[in-house]
Length: 90
Image (cartoon, rainbow, N blue to C red; front, side, top):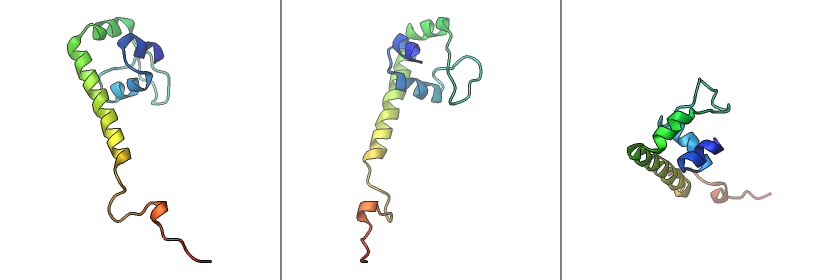
């Protein structure tokens, strides 16, 4: 995946995102935690396709914005964080 990311101009951690949204398909049927291999000829075609690059960039951006937004949101109403749980006296 590092070579794939570098070839396409993305970060290594963006490749699983592209696979998840089905913009990039690994060869064979690898397990989710297995090594992923990609056809060089297909990567060359995708790297030359401005429409695909636009879709891929939007998908990666949307994924990370959503993930960061979820991290920044306060806990759901009615739930308490550990820091909000009242201490008990001993």
